Length: 584
Image (cartoon, rainbow, N blue to C red; front, side):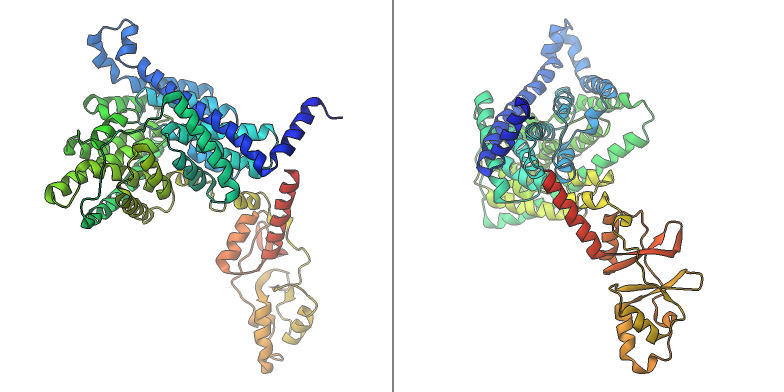
């Protein structure tokens, strides 16, 4: 007998199972994710204030000592994070945009509820204490966790859980950056990886509600206040193309150092794990003594570059210092996103490059500030491998739609330059480095969960190596197999005959009385073992362009125990998909 509680969820699932009713839940998620994104931003500001001169003043520390203490704040924040993660190790295991992508592609969109609290605390502390990281990654994860939690609470199907995860991510981005269009594209281009009408509508609703919520709590302000820019001369587009290529190179350097730093702290820093974020914070703090611009998300320095208030030499140096600071912050164990740091690097590349071309060609080029704006989108688009999202996000963050052509050409040039070195975004590359392949998403997950022994045909027709060709024809005429292992007197496989091999030999009429099986068999035989998973089997089929392979005994590659075909694997996959849909 159903309880009132279970009856409610059954009715709710039935109600939300209809597409137009799903929009209602998307709106609720949009509101909650928008509010959470704003609260997360306030948490960053709270930590930033508490570890600033005002906060130190409240502790009774004289102002004369503030200068000596401020550079230590990243180390203090890192120490607190290290201790927190020591007691709550899942806080770091579940952090990052890559984990949301993994959840959607492999884990049916399921994200643990506690991810929300872990992410909010550790990331706000990292950024607020001066760690070089951005808030977009944590914001996405917080919103996605809200969407996943509500979808799971109502026991919705896997497909709807994934869509609502996208809704939460979209609303979080939209509210955090006052960028509803970019929020939609971020969710569809990066999180879900698909554009369909079915997913588009709820994500748009969530993004709109998230934006409205963010504006209600923080006001309708653009992220960066900048003057209006324009394309001065049609020939200037060539300079933006060149700068796009440079931005792609710097995006690649950014990604390289990001992963190098993680490996370095993991393999070469011989210190307790809980102390590593503090060590990273110490290094970042020391850099900040001379270059405080690298601390936190760096928005103030970006504003200076976008308004022409930053010396080009300083901008050039900050490119590399920000790359180093971000890699050390996150590589040592700090938690945060890479979007803001990549915007920072792009702004500095643009400011330095723009100063150079404007000095050389003042009549046909815009000022350095214009190039700084374009550079932001180019580097971020390359790092994330999402040019369309970043083109729109840049428009919404600056409220400047007058330089669409430079932004488009620079973003595409940067993206393709980056792809010549690495075809994966920083998020996908992170997962690949951990041995997680999302190339086929859930397909790989399902195939990897099953093994060759589950689908192989044990009724194997073998052919003795001395069997005459006419006898071979009689044997295969009653079999449905495409391949026939050829065995010696001990039953060991010495080769294999394919149906096409037999057919070709049959057309040579003079051979049927002269040849035996071993004469026409293929000697170098590829095989599978029963413990191979079906994803490995499909990769072997594709690499060899074969439809059937022998299965050999583990530890004895000459003993044939079965055959497996491509059709067997696909049939098992389709059955598994059907079972998942029935369960959902």
